[in-house]
Image (tube, rainbow, N blue to C red; front, side, top):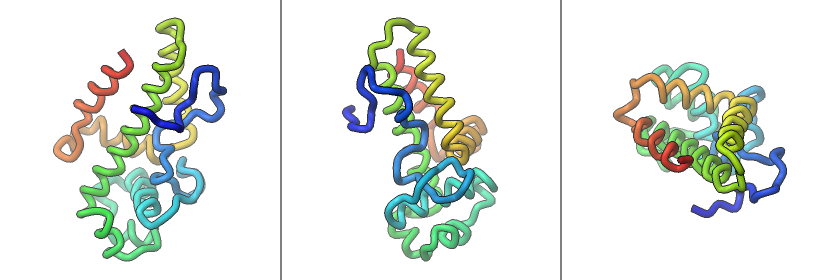
Length: 166
């Protein structure tokens, strides 16, 4: 899968994208780990949902709170998402897609050894945790809880990621 945002071999690490960098998951909230203000209502809805899910949890975050934080109405949310579960699913799918793309980019670079590949993966995780705190907190909370397996198949996603880096 081609992605113009991926680094090419020899490109500096400073610009490396991390988990959750896609513009659709950006927010202007300080310390949220999601810098900048995304374009459009869908981006704001997703960003505020991530912030609220990370802070309060998926179950405790209401659609009303999400739309108020995003500055939109419920009909706008329902234009982009069938329901809160669909919003959840799209956030997780987009974050995992970006993470997958970042891993593939790291593996496609000219890494001479397994150690260099593992270091590249570690760098992706570290940069994500540093710059995308809310998203990382949310993803880890749901990925390792087994409470949301019926919404998103994390086992299949992790297997796909491991296959990609092998």
